[in-house]
Amino acid sequence: MSPRSRDQVAACQQRLAEVLRGYPGLAVAFSGGVDSSVLLAMAKEVLKDQVIALTAESEVHPTGEREAAVAIAQQLKVRHILFRSDELADPQFVSNPKDRCYHCKKRLITAMRPQSAVLGFEILAHGANLDDCSDYRPGLKAAEELGVVSPLVQAGLTKADIRALAKQLGLPNWDRPAMACLATRIPYGVSIERKVLQQIDQAETFLRRMGIDHCRVRHHGELARIEVEARQIERLSKARLRRRIVDELRSLGYAHVCIDLEGYATGKMNRGVVTQAK
Image 1 (cartoon, helix red, strand yellow):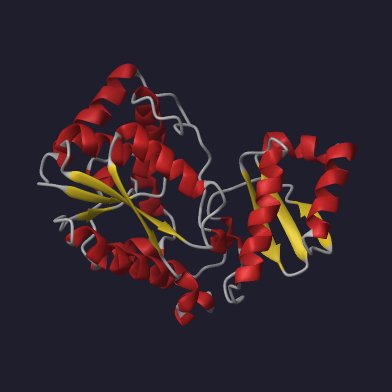
Image 2: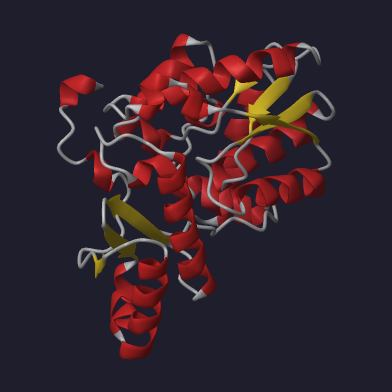
């Protein structure tokens, strides 16, 4: 990621502000990640009190995500609505098809609508960015079908632009690794179970406690495949830490633990997904 100059960041901020001025008010689907945080921060700056944040709570979200969202909403002084989403009650989500994210997003948006409407906010926005449009993201289709707006995309902002803008805005998560839904660790076609989500979450929480912030534990039945940034692979291979990780993950129920030698890569579980599935 090449660094953005001060002028480039200012241009990004101006473009996003212009898009946001076109809305009378905005309800932001807020995960606490850097994308939705920048959207929320700029919406607050432009729209003042005509903005609210909506955050879903359920087993599919990694530990610490809710707390991060609450802290940032408080920092920005934005009204924050927490609500329970129950993805595991949806058979289409649980069956884990290749368009799983479509069903998840559709359910989430449907749950958010009455939450925002009762407060007088008819326009719902999410933090999709320009880079997302080039990946396999069925959730974007659901959002588009249900009329959710994407101000970051409208402003032409990439992930690199957003991180640079987040840093300038003083957001504490400007360099925080992405915290995708835990279901993304499970291969398509394998049923999503509560106990498996908990197992994955506990394994990743342990790795973060070991100082490995950017990690994924891909779940392949009895096998845990750990993805970390390439520069961290050698560290994980050192005998003492390796032994601790193996012991911990075996205590969580994994019979085998391995390190992915390629390292972490966005959307790796989407490899092999047929393009027509989009």
